[in-house]
Length: 353
Image (tube, rainbow, N blue to C red; front, top):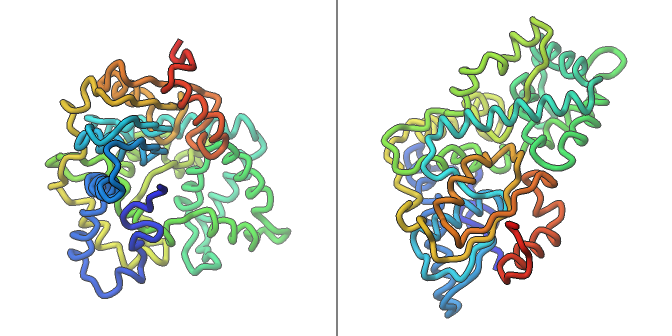
């Protein structure tokens, strides 16, 4: 069964149209019920409806976060769990999560310039142009410097750097203006307009039973690191650092479809009564086999925190740690990854050795 989790796909997707007519607090109340704890309840409803005593699950990325919530609530319903790039940072404060992922983003930006050294000046040229001009995209949204740099979200997947490089190749036309094809690509490479739940709820996946609000954690941590200030980098001739899998308050001002939801986003960022997502005592030395692929240089899910979770889960958790793949390894080579995880489960592969 491939489940469209709450608020996505065919499960009453969250869009500007589906939220039309609701007040900001009504939307906040609705979205609060779309987190991993309730997604697990949906999974349990499917299991019971199918008459299955136990099920096996596969969780990629956020699916791994949901898996750990499942193990926290209904471990007896699970026969085995397979996780790819999704051993969540259980017990870590959201600020520390983003401090770690910003370091990964800095490294991926460095790798990008190492791979395409000629793009240093091209990136600087686009940033300078955007800082001096008001640029409207074909969709009607505004292309700001921050939005341009947010394209770095693709650097955490295989082929992402190459894709951006080829887009940047046609950034300008002969008269010095930004190429229309480049602007179309900038529209295409951001899915926030069509998937606003990502912007609205992303930081809440790190809010587990805390009395402190998330308060735009990625944005706050960005301001702690001088190297991430593109204005200073542009003025000093330094490399300009991109951003990654992060959400920012400025998105509600520059993405056309997000503007009506700006008030909702601010209320969610200020929310301080999020419920718990994990039960560390139930996760400790878990009796359910967990077979995980973890990516050493994952830009989205910090491996150091994943390692701590693996130790919490105990000897039944077996991890294949690799730098052969990026975060999208399951999509890039799903056959090989799942084949190895299944062999680990059946005792047919000596991983870990």
